[in-house]
Length: 452
Image (tube, rainbow, N blue to C red; front, top):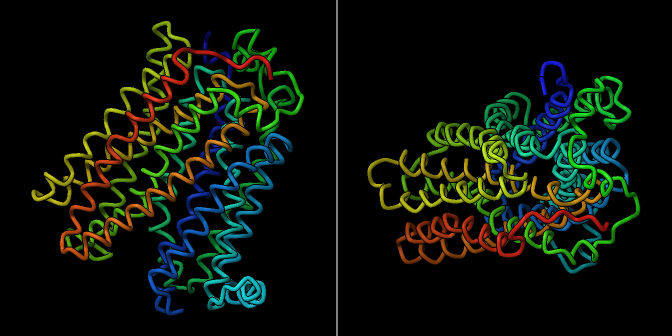
């Protein structure tokens, strides 16, 4: 097919998903960037801050299960709108954490939790933020399944997923500056308000492909170019129970893959600054450049990883088998993280670059593992399956974070925290090969779900 004649409107939708994911990560990172100032102002201990962040992780993990169902029930347009409204309101709520804490302190006391109002306020705000943000990926994957044929979905997913990396770069460049000039409350309000601007464009430009007047017939035919059997399965509209979805090995393959690997990304995201400080004595101003370099590297992994399966698909593999072949190669790159500690004596840039390769591989992996769902499940159940896997990924993230903290405390007490990081880097390095092996064992060959 001639791409020029087909049209390119589907990439407008992909751009909207990219910006939504960017906003998602901007809102998520404001607290971590302001944590030193907030800890000083409110007298938080490290445990207090850890408890606040843990609320987000647990709430996000649980909400992912319901977010997928929520999006499937409301549809992509309304479901995504509600998700970003909720998380944008929650982001702004952080600016009023003291007032919110005062309002909820009685409830916490009744539950036997006596906490300062600032901690209560931020906990409540983080929980609502997690609930709203959990809708981003189920809705975005569902929109991708609606607007792209299977052979293009990983590439489209890689593009919108790179918004996470852009958000990670933009947050350090904007949040501290806003807080310095107008105060920390303004940072939460101004960053949180961006989501409402996005909603305007979403309602202008998005509609279901079959109702989208901006799509040419040729592009609509290209979007629906998957086999007739797949389209027939997709068009069934009855509700699919969660327990029925859990009866498929395809669901469990995705769930295990997310459980094993999501925590690696969170570990790199949250612990790299602490690693550079603990092992190389770097201060906040010195850490910023390595972080920008690392997150910039991950953009190439996200987009390149999304494109990679097309190489095998163009050689005759079906979408799923081509994707799994690409994911096996991608799973080998994190093994380079094993050399981060042995070679770290040369320069701190060695572990930064090696971890950057590992984080880039994660984004490439993420673009493809999300798309394995739309490879095998009908569109109406994609968001639900993504939500189940997202919950598993969130739980995996909590486990790896808690494990890392325990190891670092243990080896720091022994005067050799480097050993703790060596162990964690090893876990991160092999997680993808383990995940791929189990996924391949559960679903050895392409087997689409046709009875939903």
